[in-house]
Length: 141
Image (tube, rainbow, N blue to C red; front, side, top):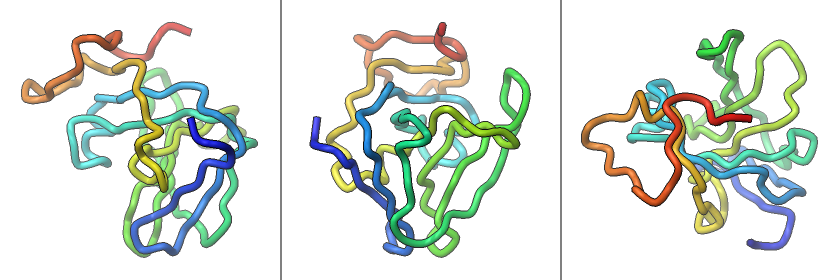
């Protein structure tokens, strides 16, 4: 794992961030919403403590979708280029963690997934790694 801070941003460079923590989890979310927002079979996400994430340039726009277990799930993106940067934030309350899109990292090779979640939503053409644990929805806490 690289030294902290971990850095990243959007494709046009208008939004930049840094994270002063190692990831709490690394996973591939196959829920239908992540498929639609990522444009692929899953969203590669890394979870971090929310208080260790900070924007160093620009501002994000947000969009919220319904969570399966209730409430709203907030995702952050660049208003200029549309790059998805964050997710897994609970709208309307302070989140304890933040999901960061692994593809937005300056060094995306840091992403080493440890599980697949929402596999009940996976597409038939999605070739999942058989070595990773699979969870039909949220993983057990």
